[in-house]
Every structure is written in structure tokens, then in C-alpha cells.
Length: 437
Image (cartoon, rainbow, N blue to C red):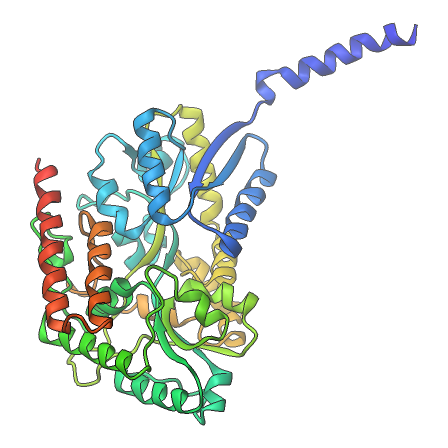
């Protein structure tokens, strides 16, 4: 009898559980965040999922930025693309040219009936992801900029002031010499050579990296990073490499780990390395501004954006786009954006999240964490707004190849930069031909 009496209740429960009204709309999010940053991404999705019952964001790690972009493009062509794809800044022009593949974030928000105000985002960030017609194309997510990280304990051991890091490139060379004399085998290194030593270097000194306002003014842009100033800088780094003051550790972010481990004492790297340093470094560290040459008029200006944004891919259902919009609204909350900034070292992408962080006393308690913000919120010029080029991924690879010839003493700085510009311009011409209206 008991079994029979339970049957209607069980059937009722089964009906409720199988009811379409109870089904959550899944939002697939492909990203390139590994390690501590991967945990951050998973926590963002987990917190959003717990905040409501209609949608479930499913984050999936797809490898490096290059691998994630390649996977996203392949999946779109195969008809099984994710709803959200994280694309690093060098892939922006490629995504903009992918007509029909993306849905502008402004459109997604508008059609979902949710408030979206591009003016709340840091101008240098929002401007980078905005089309010439003023429409915001992707959602600013993890924006970074290059900064100067240094090991305070190593500075003390070398007789350097741990509270007075080098501000100029001549000072970096002098500090590196003292670090080497004290026994340090890797006084200075750098991640992302093109981004830190040519792209941001150019903006920081208010000189062009490429013509046509660094690509913002048209697809007929050409590379311009082989000027006497650029040659002088790469030549100085090459001389430091010969003396063992600068140690090249590889492409991309390969050098990051060598700073966190304490192997290298100084590094130009992403501001987003902060989270890893805070969590894993066994020494006291500091953050300072990107070095510059004091005799260059207009320097320092501002650095350029790095990191990535979130692109919404086309071909999905209206209900799914509503879920994407709801997730973006969650990420835009000042308290959520501020917490992300403080946890990772990425820029506070919105002005309210910066103000909230400032009021909380975070910058006073963690000196140097506001460096990335102050470098980016300076007034930009046509030469320093950012760099948006077609086939930028390939151009960066070319720069890596040519600079490795320079670091290895096989080419002079001028030969390396000239070759990189020539080969890079061939990529730009190819992109221009492929995307003619």
C-alpha cells in the first residue's frame, strides 16, 4: 500500500523535474585562462550561476590565446561554436573583419532589454573594442598593460634601494649591472617582446608603431617600428644581453615564471602577473612604471592595452543571448569588476570599479597596484591610443623570430627591425587584399 501511495507523488516530482520551465539555458564560454587565472574564471561563472536560476555559464579552457582563437574559428565554421569566445587584443582586427560571425555586444544587450552604458568603461579600453561608427563590438573583460616588476629582496642584496626602482632604461641597465655583480644570473628579462619592447614602447614614447594611427585609420597601415629610436632601444637590449644583464627567456609569457620563481630579478611583463606573484612568490616584490628614455620629448605618454575581451558569436537562440547579456551585466557590477581587478592585477575595466577599489584603500595597502591604471588613463594621442592591425598574430611571431636573431648576435638591431617591418608589411598587405570592401 505504501508503494502505491507514493507513486502519485513520485510521478508529480518527475513531471516537475522534467518540465521545460525548470531547464536552465546553458551558455558556453571558451577561454584561455590557466592556473590561478583559470580558477578566477571558474569562480566568476560559479558566482553568476548561484545568483540566479535561469542560466548556467559553462567555462571551458581551450589552451593559449592563439589556440583559443583558432579553436573558436574552427568551431564556428563547423557550426558548433560557443556563445562567448575570449579573444586577445591582437585578434581584434580579425574578429572585426569576420562579418556575420559575431554579434556586437551593444546589440546583444539592447535586444535583451538590459542597460548597457559604454561610457562607464575606461576610455582607453572601451575605445579599443569600438568600431568607427561608435558601436562597441566586444565586452571588455581582462584588460592589462605592461608594467615593471622587480624583486625587492634582490635589490637589497645588491645594495639597491628596494623602494626606488629604476624609472628609465639607463637606470635599468645600471641596476642590472649591480644585480649581476651581487651574483644574480638573470638581472632583467621580459615577456611578450613585441608588446612590451615595441608596441607599448612606442606609445609610451608617443611615436608610431604603425602608420594610419596604428591601424585605426585604415587597412592600408604599414609598420613604422624601425626608426632611430626603436633601433637605439633594441641595440641597448642586445648589448645588455651580451653582458648578461638581459636574459631572453622565450616567447609569449615564458619569462613570467622566471620572475615569480626568483630566478630573474626584474621583468617587464603584464600587470596581470600580480595575482601569480602574490600567490606564489617567496620574496617581497614591487611594481613600477614601464621604463622610458628621458631625452625623448613627450615621454612618458601612456601604455597600450593587452589582455582580452569577450566576443559573442552568431547563430544562437534569442533566449541564449539573453543569458549572455545577463552574464555581462553581472560582470559589469562595480563590486564584481573591482574584486576581479584586485585579485588578478588586470585593469579595473570600469570607472565605478576603479573608484570602489580606491575607496576601499586597496591601492594604499598594496603599493604599485594602481600603476597599470595610471599608465592607461593618461590622455591618449593618435600615436598612443592603441594598435589594431590585421594578421597581428603573425606579425608578433615575425617580431619574435627577428629579435631572437638580434639577441643571439646574428643580426644587428637595425637589420632585425628592418626585416621584421618588411615581413610584417607583407602580412598587412595580405590582410588588406583579403578584406577589401
